[in-house]
Every structure is written in C-alpha cells, then in structure tokens.
Image (cartoon, rainbow, N blue to C red; front, side, top):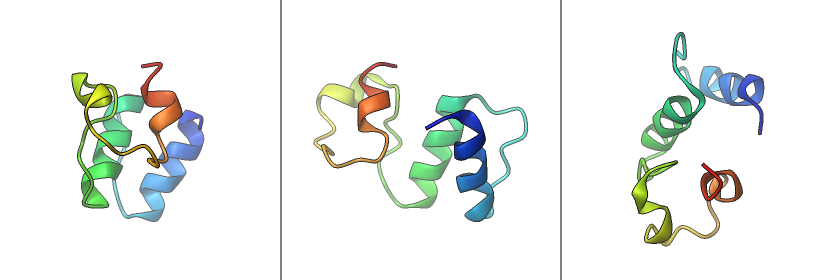
Length: 61
C-alpha cells in the first residue's frame, strides 16, 4: 500500500496524518483499530498477527 492510500485510509478513520511518516501513520491506524501498534518495530517476529493488513510490508520495514 502506498502513502497516498494509507493517508486516505487514515482520513476515512478521522485521523490527521500531517507530517507523519508512513510507519507512524500505520501505527496510528493500528491504534485506532484497537490492534497492537507493532508495524516496523522489533515485534514483527513475535506479534502473531499473520493476517494483518500490513504484514507483507512490515516484515520488509
């Protein structure tokens, strides 16, 4: 998912993304959706959320 798509998703959730980096936006979305804010962190190998929308991109981050 590219940055524009992530920004739109965040806006649709009522979140402000001004001056946020991609990883910060994704973690903000994760928080809003009541998920672990683990994107791009060291938790990637232990989060256990294999069906996560961000999983494929996260393991690369």
